[in-house]
Image (cartoon, rainbow, N blue to C red):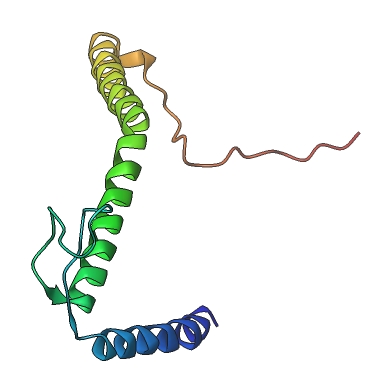
Length: 120
């Protein structure tokens, strides 16, 4: 169901986007001077409009991905600390079991406990 919904929504959106990009092939310089639009002090070379639109889309996606990555740095640091602590505890447990072989549990912890029925 999700695959069909994805296709029903995104195929028309992508088709409209491709038609828009093909229809806007005229060369457009981007002006960075709001005070003199006829003779800007700073402007970009004249490139097709689709180039500027796709470039801004890629820049937006890259900035969003960078923001997401930066916002997760605390969680990654916590996970790294947890992995280090887990390794240290496993090493300590192995050393303890090597010193005290009888202290190791004899039962398999993955096996469920067996309960016996009693009559009251």
